[in-house]
Length: 84
Length: 160
Image (cartoon, rainbow over all chains, first blue to last red; front, top):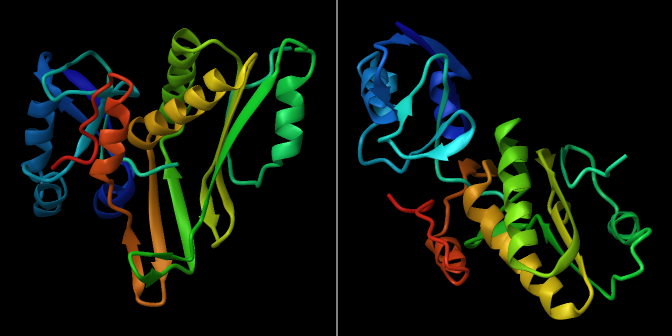
């Protein structure tokens, strides 16, 4: 098992909270993790829905959904960034 | 001690003090370009009474540090200072400072623009506007993604 530290920001944080720890199989991609989370509850399904503009970060660097989530990784989901 | 290049803070910043610190003990500097982003009192015709800024502590600093390393590689510049505020801001408040020093002006101007284009699309910050009609998260702009392409970088931040 691999315990992943999931973080949420901005509009997604408002729905799902700051984050959660979740146990996943050893080898999952960021995209697969997103699908697992979508299956957790109706609010997860709405906040992380496919087709919605959503960015992800793996260990605090912007990442593609194809990236492999390593042991004890931190994965963040958030809307497009709007700083500056 | 090496001065910090990136600071995320709730407090305001002082342009004069920051530029003075950046120029201190570097007599090769002949140009300083600085950009300051501020809070508008309206967007798309809607009034803005305040603006809330959120970031991703740790990742935000790392992302901007990487941008500065990239700028130092691409441009002939001497020093960079970036300050970005978070928390609750009011119209006319300062949000962000990007200041760059160089020997001649062209490199400082370009690096300053490059850093802002990069920051807009790659640094994890989110703005929420409050108005008498309610609060709304600001949408990312495709034009900001387009701005980054002139530096040979692609971004799909605003894309669906």
